[in-house]
Image 1 (cartoon, rainbow, N blue to C red):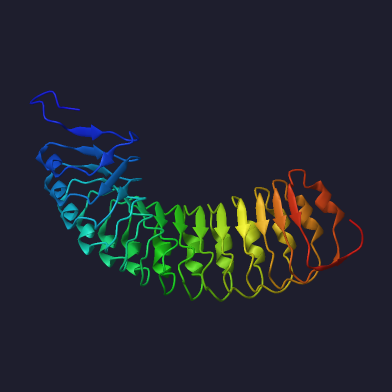
Image 2: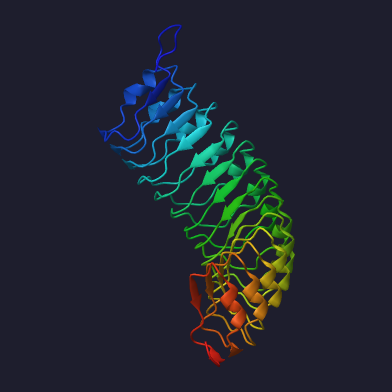
Length: 335
């Protein structure tokens, strides 16, 4: 696309055209280019550093190709850049701290590459950023507490990286955060209770780590949570009855931990819950009959615990139930 005044090319949009070969460095001659969109092709080779000379560039979309090499440091000079998508390539090297200088950046998509090194704390300076996707790389180190300065961020996806350290409690201060996914990251420590005050958080995933301690009862105060996934950790203690106050919750996954005690009967009050997994813990006592009030539940898993007593007939009232797993307990009576 060209502008109408002096016939300069302002947009190159060729997604999904089975393009092959490399990205020409000569594109850097298009001095008025605003949008470079070449995703879903078969492009290979490195990303030309000369593209960093395109001072007007606002959007770079090179996702879903076979690009290799490093992310050009020259991209950090693109002060007008609002959208940078390099996801699903084979890029390596580190994420330059200078990316924190891109004050106009709204979306950063570096996921599914082979990026290494740490997450730069300077990324916390991206005050306009809404989406940060860094998952499925080889990033190490801790989660920088400075990410709590991302005052506009809505989606923060760091999962499947060999990180370490704890979940910074400061991230709970992110008043615009809707999705926080950090599963499979070798995290240790406890779940910060402060996340019970994160106002619009809907998706909170910390599964497949090495988290210990209890599930904070304060999470029951969260006004917007829909997906709570803490499974495959080393969590202990009892399941907080306060979780029953999460009226918007749709999925509760606490399986494969070390929870003890009984199943809170209050969970039966959760009318929007469609998936509940409490299996492979050390839960005792009986199955509360009140769980037959979970009107929306479709999948319900309690297997591999130490539950006793009979199967409540009230579970037959679960009209949407598709899967019910109760094996490997000490239940008796008739079905």
